[in-house]
Image (cartoon, rainbow, N blue to C red):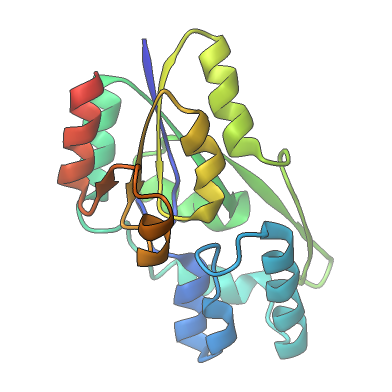
Length: 199
């Protein structure tokens, strides 16, 4: 019995923070887990910038409303869910992901929550669970699932490393250099081929 565990941003949907950075012209917000492996450091950095610039959740939601899944992602999700179980394990937030998950056909998503104050400001964030991607894959294995995990960045490595089968999807060159043993898919068609080989 198989289960496919995928990262969300950079695999199925665009990087939300990068899209917001491009809309606002704030280059510093283009920093992602590809650049900063420590998620708490990265989020504190982002929230500090939002406070300094006076941006609120509604400003980010406006940008998210203009985004679509990555080319081929909708068809890829449809194929995976027609073959086996799919769970999206993401370090995004429920408030960000909703509109894009609807466009993907509402696959199961495990992610985090934002804490919004009465003015609409993002006051903080709440992790669903520390290192939740790895813990979810480990839990699926205890339920006797044959696990497959794929993602594009450093914050995906803990789940990739504990999965029975694994791949990187469009990772930065630095990551492929550091982890040459991991299979790499550059398109959803290539990722489908890897998954087909283990189903």
